[in-house]
Length: 198
Image (cartoon, rainbow, N blue to C red; front, side):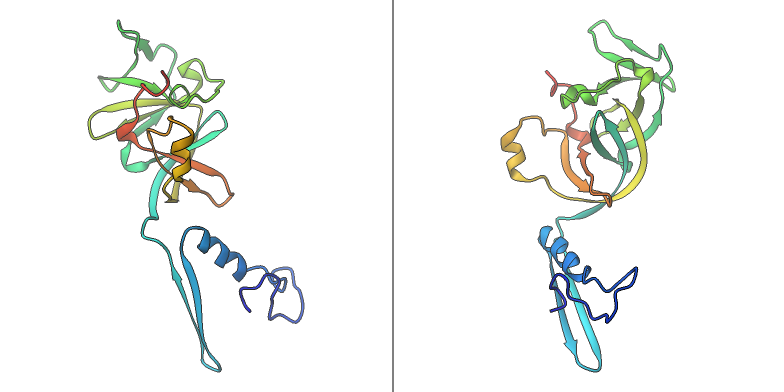
């Protein structure tokens, strides 16, 4: 009965409890991620609550940023630094690729909005933010709109139907839902290339 919506053991409703909203929400959310919640009660002694969560869910420390109206998270382990470029920092090489010089090293610039076909008001690099990332094969920089900060999130795999709906999921390793209900795409820096926008 404790999992029924609206069920409460309180005799009076207070500001914080008595409305029967709690255990039913917990159980529903755990079921949505493929887990389970069970209770074993011994009258007069107490109870044991057992929560099982799939091992496919992992905790990721990440930097959250935005491009247009889409939120992304990149694992902190792949981040070298984040900067706001000055006018003239980004230049175009003879082959037409955008590049930036950081600490005496030259890195390619990847526009996240271009890769995933996201509308953004950021045209000039100095109007946005730049993040220097390290992948297995190379280092590069990504250009985005706004940096929100560091978050610890639960990473989930993407639903299979998304891959059937679009071919633009390369470079995305999963997603995370934050406490405010917002969905954030997790970047796969090892598969993030500028080929997606072409």
